[in-house]
Structures are given as C-alpha cells and as structure tokens.
Amino acid sequence: MRERLTVRIILIAPTGRVLLMRYEDPRILEHPIFWCTPGGGVDPGEALVDAVRRELKEETGIADAEIGPVVWYGEPVVNIDGERRQFRESYFVVHCASETLANDGWTDLEKSVIRDWRWVTPAEIAAIGETVFPGALADLLPDILAGRYPAEPLLVRG
Picture 1 (cartoon, rainbow, N blue to C red):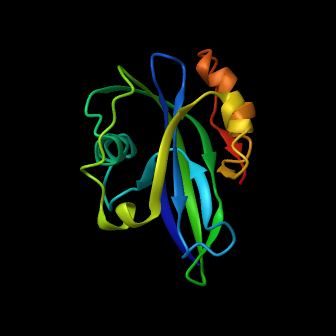
Picture 2: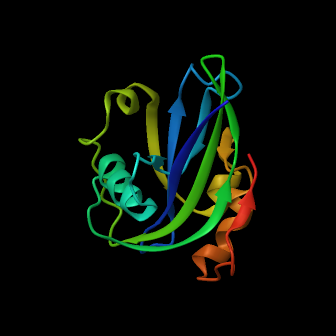
C-alpha cells in the first residue's frame, strides 16, 4: 500500500469560524462527495510547516497566517481509483486575519474536484448532511477554538 505524508489546516478566521472545502472526486470510491479542511501532500524533503505554508497559499490565497501546533493526526486508508493508500495526516492550527479567499493557485486536479468552500461553526459542520473528514470534527473543534490544545496530538479517525 502506498503511503502519503500530508498536512491538514484547521484554518480559523477572526470570527471563530473554520474553513471547509467540498470535494466531488469520483476517484474516491467510498465517499466521492465529502468536506474536509484545506491541505495536501508534503513534497519530498519538505518540512511539515513549509508544506502548511505552501498548501495554505495554493488552496486559499492566504500568504500571511499564524501557524500553530499540530493538535491531531490521522492515518486513514483511502481507496483512490481502486488503489488503497495510507495517509499520514498532521492537523495544524492556523489563524488568519480575514475570511477573504482566492483560488487562483489551485492545481488542475483541485479545479476538477473542489466544488465549494465555506467558513463554518462546529454547529454548522454537524448539520452539513454530507460526509465530513475527520468524522469527529464538529466535536473536536470547540476545544481548539477556545485555545485548549492537547499536550500531544490526538488520533482522529475517519
């Protein structure tokens, strides 16, 4: 099984809302429609924090943000085009100065699969009605939004 090191960004606006992105990706067989935080793969030799900066700029247009600690990690196995892939995800807390976004840095793949993005509260996440990754996001966010970070990153599942 192929592994992919990734960073996920818990992007927090001054309003206390977080950014989620809605994907429609037919390559992902179990859940082709889902919401998740911004983020993506870590390039070979790239430090995790540098990957956060690059992915943040690429996916949101935000170049200046306060990057905080890793608070969660995940190890989901995802079936993409019939191939099982193991993701090694580190979730970083990142604070931004505004909710202004730009998508002009999206890759061709991102343009083909990202259908929406939305600033949301934990209550709004719980009411989305579609798959959200990680599944416990709405329950985990209140502590993060209040600045209560775990001493060690917590394992989050699906």
